[in-house]
Image (cartoon, rainbow, N blue to C red; front, side, top):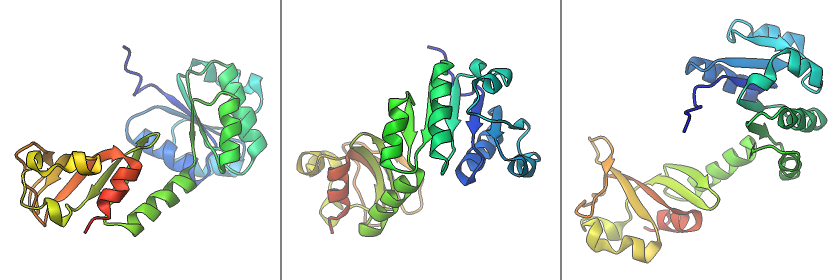
Length: 220
């Protein structure tokens, strides 16, 4: 299987999300072709992005001239201009880009992007709001949805599991989650084992279905 993680990426739309993404990719050593229709925006990003151009991403011929069909991955980061977002996404799919990511500003927008062929649809504002709500409502220190209803969370061990080896705790049977890693108060994260004993000062990473993860982090 070919590793495509370091392949160049096209980023279309240089608003806050698109520009942050493009700059971070460049910082990580990924070649980026950044495209925006606004000359002032492109000019402001020229010092931070080696390959940034003013272009109309809704014009198929322009995309061909820029060499976009040669890219494996593309991200449509256009926000408020829904027509441009949808049309750009459909053109990238038509150009047979194998991995198209598209930003949506609403669930309805996201559904349309999926229908025109986007392989991944992201809702940054919604996802961040949902994540923050989870962090505020429980003892979670961090949270990440993995796929569908599966999640990882960083939290503190509930009282009933402190001082008991994980293999004897019945944690998975009772709550449907697994302790993946443990970090002591002055240590680094290590893999959890059946003989691992949790302490009050520990931080743990748990995995399981989102509903079960949330329920576990609400235990006293």
